[in-house]
Amino acid sequence: MKPMTLVAAAFAALVMAGTAAMAQAPEKKELKLGVGGKALLYYLPLTIAERKGFFKEQGLDVEINDFAGGAKSLQALVGGSVDVVTGAYEHTIRMQAKGQDIRAVLELGRFPGIAVGIRKDKAASYKSPADLKGMKIGVTAPGSSTNMMVNFLLAQAGLTPQDASFIGVGSAASAVAAIKKGELDAISHLEPVLSMLERDGDIKIVVDTRTEEGTRALFGGSNPAAVLYLKKDFIDRNPNTTQALTNALFKALKWIDKASPEEIAAAVPEEYLLGDKALYVLAVKNSKPTYSQNGIVSAAGMKSTNDMLVKFDDELKGTSVDLSKTFDDRFAKKAAEVVK
Image 1: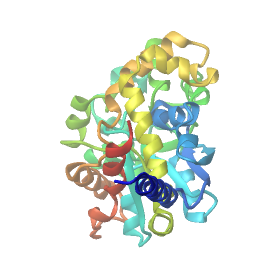
Image 2: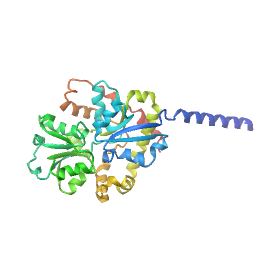
Image 3: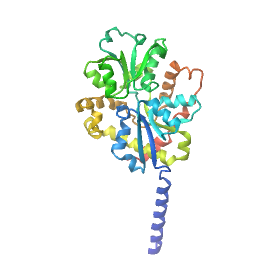
Image 4: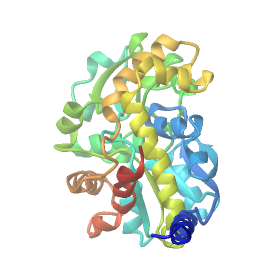
């Protein structure tokens, strides 16, 4: 091949590479992301993606709006004040049942990581979920996944959500304080709140989905937790942006998988440690098994979550949700190919 031909071929290759790169550029670079309780370990992949600069690596400028609970971040998405949400997978099923096409694109948590604890002075009298009747139960926010967990327990005992009182206690310090002050009879919550209350002897855990064993014991199968979800029309208009978000959070999952609890504690904001780094490290150890290994919500996980919801949610009884519309696996599969 002549020198000029080689130069021309090289130039053409560069042009093609540049065009491909431009084609993959995010359509929407500035985004608002909603989350309900960012400091909770349930949402650790989001914090890591932010702190490690993984969003910026993907050409994104992500403004994170932290709400009191997952139900609030869902409301923000529906209302249009945020573009995307990291929240519980079950919200996609509930919204599909209401005719709103909201879909998850990446699984962040493969187990809920939620535990229900009874205040120590009431723990001895607790024998089964039927004993939750009449209790004041703390949750991150009414309507959030921590609330739905208790609703499911009540349904197993033939009770309804109206048989208990639910109190939104927020995500961390306020939740711990509510138990310690005796304002609650029980709490349904996440790490690091659980480890703090357990260590101090304030609660007795009676239901625990921080492990695969505990999750299967309660649901009879897998039960996905946090996901990245958004409106289908956003996905259709912004496929490159959706892929970039997925790539950043997938990279965070890979980083978490390889990191030690101590490295994770060093990566999060100081205030997340609640003044006790050793406790936070313990909470991370308890949480590490909960994170997704491949970013994919399994068909069994979709069915398990749907089966849970129909047991207590009157709006879902008698409805038929096409579960394939609740999770779009294209972006997680692509992330697995491109993220190193």
